[in-house]
Amino acid sequence: MRIETHVVIGRAISRHLGLDPYLEKRFIRGLRKPDLRVRRGGRVRSHHGVHPESIMSIVWSARRAYLAGDHERSLEYLGIALHYVQDKCVVWARRRLRRVHNRVERTALSLELPVEAIREGFGRAECSLIFVKSILYSIKPSTDPVEALRNACYYSALVAGAVYNPSKPSRDLLEKHEKAKAVAAKWRRIRRFLVSALALVFCVLLILHPHLSAIYFIAVLFSLPLLFYSGVDPRLKEELAWYGLE
Image 1: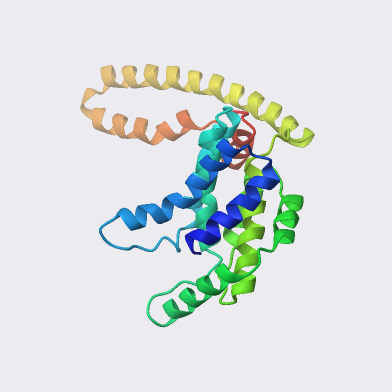
Image 2 (image 1 turned 30 degrees about the vertical axis):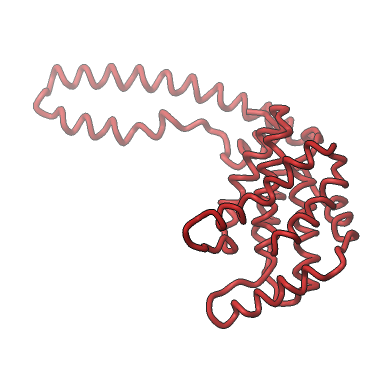
């Protein structure tokens, strides 16, 4: 997308979020950042093929800042993430398809913004880490300017509505949180026992068979994963962290 198109979409997103002029300025600054970095660099480098996980890391920064109450920083990170989301909606390739990409960008710049796609995106947005990941992985580039612009608006609204969202976790997630805390406490007790037992066994074996110390050391290394296992599903931990629950 051309930088002017990013800004137009950004202002429409800002109006839907109800941002004041200062916060909107920070949000637009974030939207412009990736293109400004390219222009200031010595050579032009594409940022259209950014991997969804890389975008997700920026989305995480936006969500953490939002949970901390730092809306200025949150909106700037959100702007950067949405820039990459919008760029992924336009087909990109070197050589032959490069001309198609440029044509789509030029035509999209002259089109009327599909505001209904933004309303639809906010209406369907869910405050969930799993939801955002599924959105980022579902974006498909298009060679049709109308479709590309509509997708850019729609997906931007979905991500913005998920990140900049005061919703509380569901009762089901809160119950899982309580169970996870109980499991984590259980594994902390198990780890303390394992550390004590391993230390005792290691010391005894060193006294009785010091010449086998290398084997004992290797055995301890293989036991280390057990000491760091929390017993909690990593995906659940991430979803809990999305709401500030750790």
